[in-house]
Length: 218
Length: 218
DNA sequence: TCTCTATCGATAATGGACTATCGATAGATG
DNA sequence: CATCTATCGATAGTCCATTATCGATAGAGA
Image 1 (cartoon, each protein chain N blue to C red):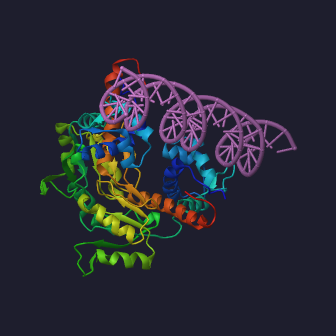
Image 2: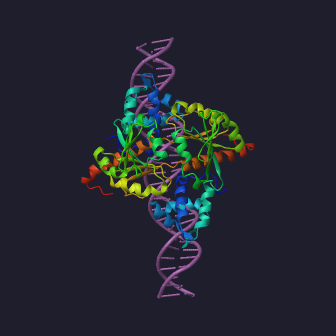
Image 3: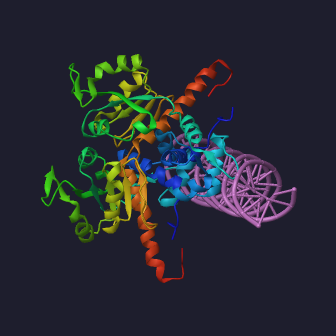
């Protein structure tokens, strides 16, 4: 099997390729074109693509539809991915209206909240149920992914319920760490940390600007 | 200067250490303790810490307050970091209520939106101004960071205005790429991609589960 | 005082990712 | 038909991160 273990760095770039390939109108697309448009190295793009597709041909490049399909398969989004939202506060409801899930096959199946006591209600098209319904729902719909958007103080308790409901991957928006069994994966979605990263980067460039009086040229 | 260029991977872990050290009640904390609580390698923690602090002593570890201070300085959050929110829709207003900024020194100075025509209004404590006010505000308050929470169709136009206003780092929630000058840094905050990542990981573990009948033990 | 243990910092070895360069192929051109 | 060009895939070299191992130090206990 060629899909043994895709390099992590490659996986990070595949969505970029997919996003671009989807906008391409021509029947063929080359790694060179992709690299130029995305500001990446030509060789790197070619290496990444060679790992997930065998449709490339010299002089002409890749057939765009087939490459798109191969990218979607490599990313596992050729079929729908159901997910639930736990926590229907500001962030949770904002995500219910998020327009970025559809292109990647993510399907928010339902939302759950402690304040939806016994009476399921709706936010637009989305049903919001009480937390007590989480277990049965996840089992019935075979949901393995959960988005956690409760306040930090409630995060651990909510996460425990998610794990007990069969969720094996949690995207955690709460700015805190949650403890889960080793077979469950947690990814932090910390907005503040992302900003701190950005600030470090630009602080660094500001220091470089101060050094511009010297002979450094980048 | 020892702070030449901190390894990227280390920077990703520093916030974890800071988060943990802040919860520590004892006057001393050792790399071993941190490693155990965070599930990381003992040596890795020690190496990371040795790059940002010289307070470590054999047998006793690090003085918690000094280590916390050194971590905050390394992350550049020992002073307030002002940022603006562009786009006061669902996501934007959700972020105005986000409780995770304060521990990392992020200060949302104001929000801006096209629909706030000329009349600044408030969301809780937060002022929301028209986009036309962005330029003057960023210059006056020396804001260099911006959070972009407009729909994908408006993202590029809004980003252009942010760049023109002196913003040099953009955290982009819109599920699309935006083109900026080379001196401006953009970080994508793509919730769908994060879920795709998670799904790939757990799909992989599901394949491993099917292999559990073999002799593999992890 | 001497030894033992926990911890630190430093150095070496392994592995993964990126970059550069090469040969091979398919179409275009003369 | 021969040559040229754009593109692919593959290999080798360099760099960075992680892991493993070592010596050194400070406090605990005999």
